[in-house]
Amino acid sequence: MKNPSPATTDAGSRPGDSASRRLGFAWIALCIALAVHVTDEAATDFLSVYNPTAAAIRNRFPLLPLPTFTFGVWLAGLCAAIVILLGLSRPAFRGSRAVLWLAYPFAVLMFMNGLGHIGGSFYRGNLMPGVYSSPLLLLASAWLFVCARRSRRMRGMS
Image 1 (tube, one colour):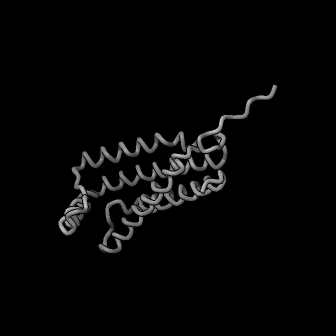
Image 2: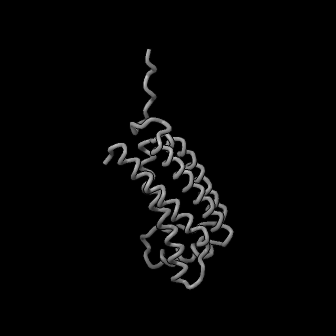
Image 3: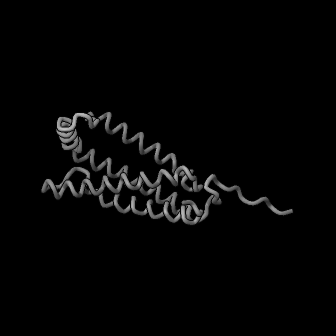
């Protein structure tokens, strides 16, 4: 009697196929890059730049809801987000369609975050907090974007 075919995921892929594995590794890499980036920001007093900037933008554009943070709330929120994102790595390795769709905004936001720190450093004429880890964010987010795109193509998703 033949063994039943391996279970398929909601994305129609077999667990452990190469595209899903690459997506999973890219997902974890971006989560780790984000954790390194948050550590970089925390160590270089990111909020001393962010909070006054957010307040100035909010004064100029009152309808734009930019919050300001205390260090504890900011760090706890980002740590919780990283834990939640890391919790999605198992579905990423399984080729989950939901994670595949989440990969795009995650990758784009982190790429923009990295560019923002680098561009802000040029604009200000000195290194912004978080700039040291920004290249890591750029690389990891580009890798996740490419892996998500390849996974979608392999699955015939539009």
